[in-house]
Length: 472
Ligand code: BGC
Image (cartoon, rainbow, N blue to C red; front, side, top):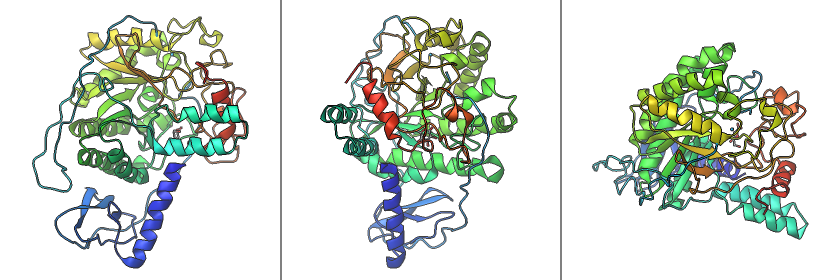
């Protein structure tokens, strides 16, 4: 909701700016497809943050007009396609990862607004250690509005507790990059958790989260602009530790779904665009965990070894930066960190939960030279044995909020348990006539009626609260 509010605010600013011919402080002032004001207020400079797509008024030393920033058409359109993805999970040894004071990008000057020197960021161990995670104001607004719709005082009180639990901010469109100028300063001194999620031909083996960019419509260059915009915002806010999950489902699809022509067509582009993201964001000091599917996807014997190969290849292509910290598993999925017993839907897979999967994958990566660490999404994993098939992933009925985020993971490979999917946001619409309708979202395990992916799903959220384990 806050994204919607923010976008509306930005649009409103542009409209009013069009009258005044001056964009606001931090406002957009140019870029392909942009038609708003191109002047910046006195003392602010229209700066190419991710040219040619995004120019922004940043604090500077002179008043400026922004002359030639272009305005051509934007590219958003979504296409459709079909099927599973974040479908279907760890035990542990112990090693408390470095309890270092994880200061990271020390103080540096803003690269976009001054010509001062840039401090090369240095990675320091587990980025979650010793730091507080910023609570998303966007998610808090969603939860507040959910609480407003509930009259039962007990339930309302439980709902409001959800606001105290950090979730990730998904940048699923280029337009949302501008929100970082609100969020990153607000998260100063803390961790800001981000999902990078705008690859061209996104969600190649499913429909529900098809995105705005396409390789055959200049998507690779636009994606670079999107990544550049994120990197520039991070550099402007060196006191905020930024931790990012890189592109849910994309590499996993390249392991198992290349028989789908939509994925094979996207494969080279996925790899080169992801490499660009890894290199650019590492240079900005962003700690990254590439998405690694989950136990029921890449944890199968036939998949885990090729998956390890691909992840190590991507780490290598990305320059082996220590900021490419590792892998994120179970993103937006429902698997247990440690299942009391195998869910019948796991059908004999030895890696039947995230601990088993991670404990199997991590040594493979180490053998190939990468000491990757993991984060695990447990946001919706509170209830187990609720799926008729492990591959079902859309708005699974009966799910509950799960283990709370912590660095006390009891597993040497796991940096943190986190909530990556903001619980209450839909996985996909159940409207069969929608362009992005995916049969998974109308399947036997899916709660319906469900709104579009990312939109608030109040009935689902209430279930997550009521079924939470640990309980609220
Ligand atoms: C959707 C995104 C959304 C994210 C978090 C994804 O499935 O495609 O639009 O931001 O979930 O809710």
